[in-house]
Length: 365
Image 1 (cartoon, rainbow, N blue to C red):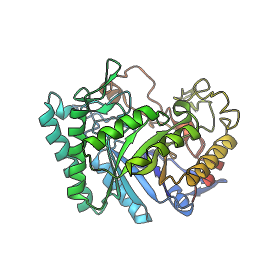
Image 2 (cartoon, rainbow, N blue to C red):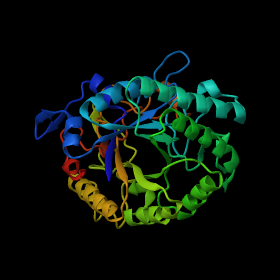
Image 3 (cartoon, one colour):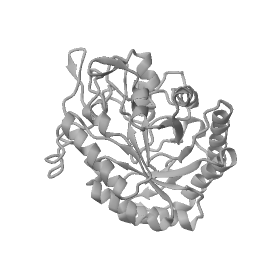
């Protein structure tokens, strides 16, 4: 089973002086992960994560240049790479799949061409720079489609529009096969306990003869049920003949926000959202509970022959200048007025001061 990490914000962390410790001693966290047998790095790629007047969107500024720089660091240490195309200028997830600024107004035909060309060009850069990926995601959490509204799959409560969506996915897969034929292609959904949607989605991929290798799922218990429900859903997908991976995983070590400039910062997974009756009793939101959850999940995944698991942003420490979005980034995704602080910091495998948590040593081969 592949064990990997998505640390797309890591270079931005280092630029802001982040430091990581084990029992008070300074460490290189990438070396520490390798010592645990974690040896694949997932790195997201946004098309153009800055405003028209050049203001960065932050959260790693994850364009192809960031992929190359972080990929070179990872490769120098012995990691293989997973390139995660979002096909947006900023965050793409089940609630938003924004068309890149440069593609606004495109017809389906022109968008298919643009997606193909962008995928091909990015992969050609990766090959030329010596950071060709071993794994490639064509889209990120595309349960409800991508490049809305052109490739949206859920409209007015109905799931539809697979013909247009499959044209877009096929364009990305073709570019991957042409440039990096040895890489495996992943189609990544969330809603990982929803058997109906997974069967529908991957049946449609089969009908459209989409060329891919891996069914990928996000798994966060706050939204996606128990490990058993998630793994039962993936088991039910085995008849599609693909590998099965958990592309994103996270669990909290606290439900208390961190203090910055004398203010407690809010969290996406706060005390209210992290309360899962019958689940957090067994795996409390605490350093010990986080470790128990990781140990339990990995044990179950091995028993079920899951092919890979990636922990999402285990190094995303909070701090001055560390944001999930700048104001310009918020404007792009139409989420203005929120706090811009790092709202995911309590899901890390290091505490708010950079000290390694017990769960770190449970995430191992």
